[in-house]
Image (cartoon, rainbow, N blue to C red; front, side, top):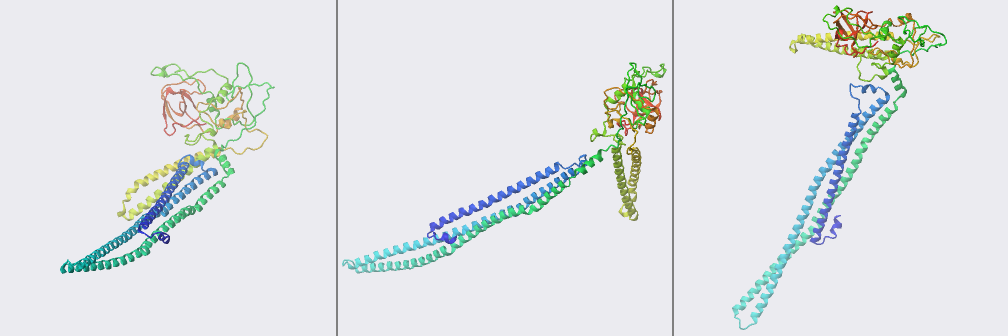
Length: 620
């Protein structure tokens, strides 16, 4: 590089031009380096932005803690999706590593190197300018010495000619001739001195010039060349580092992708299907076959308390519904409750009496009267009305229910109760661990009074004891419900020639087990149906069911004579239990004892609902 440059540098102006060219070229090299630094910096910003977006995406689809979404992640497919989200989070971390490594290994290093390069370049060109100025000064000194020598030589020639002229002139005195001779000798001496000085200056300049062109300038060019080559090597190494930073994270990224593939391969459709079956298994026994109804034989309709039909005036015959075995159309409903349900008041209740003492009025206020419709009409209304408590397949998440989960099917109720028992046992264990820790602390305080007052933990110990006792009572309560449910779960059906149950066509199994608060079932039936079921079988099937839980108490404000089916008579001032609050129709369902319950006008009683039971859904 230097020799090539030197071949054309035979004069000062040429050297000056080459310095200008080198200065422009090295500045362009620094600009290229800074441009590459800017490129890497923008790449790191892109990596950080991409990693941030990946993390936000993973966080967006993560299940929220203590929410219903966590229950969905028990399936293998959703667990695989959760694993994918976690791996994407790690994947984003690798892009952050790329950004950090590029920033520390390339951007920061090159930025520092550019500053050093600028200082080195400035120093080299300063030395070049200084050497150029020195050789120019030497040249000027040589030119001045040369001109002085030339001038002195001309002056000496003129003085010699003048002396010779004066010496040849006979008219000039001897003194003038001597004066001219001395002047000529002086000028000759001055010329000799100038010659010697010029010769010395010339030798010095030649030496300086040789040193300048063969030593100083080549050295400066060599340093500039080395500086430029280092810059080129450094930018090449940075580009190699740029690729290596990406290559280093490829194995980890590949591992993340392998984990995603492994999670996808772990998806088990059979297992997920089985979990759905276990989650929504109701525990209900499928209905039995429907008996053949022979309409060719005349039927006799029996009107009795145990029958579910009443005679009709138009003499139309209705299909018979019954079987020799026990019917299970309405599980868990007693006969008297069913009859009360079918005859519950549907007319507006009477207003309270105007007098201060309603008991003084003969017969008191009139109970709601209604025309005795055929029971089959009531049953049709009973089966076609829309329930307020939906079957378990339509239960939506987040809907609160009774404390004993009585709004759920037997199998689902058993699972919920078991979960509640396990949760309470865990809470008891936590409280017991806290109590043991405080007991140990109290013992330490007793042995070392300076560490604390032992009496200060007594209050907390008492609270923990009360909490444990309350939790144990809760466990006993839920275990009782659990034992009750486990005892009621139906056993597998035995194959026999006798039908175990009779259900009309189209009856939904969920609707058979639910009674809505207004005393109706959801089942559409296109025709009136006569249901003839033996009283003994009906009583045996439902007499074991427990009564509805009380949700409060009430006090009778007036005397009410319950004359219609489904109502109950009360006396003024009598205290009774509330088992179903007013649903907006003006009637409240109450109980006097285990066998006496019915409806009374809401305006005739003052209701005191239990806060814990308020809002509980009626479930039979």
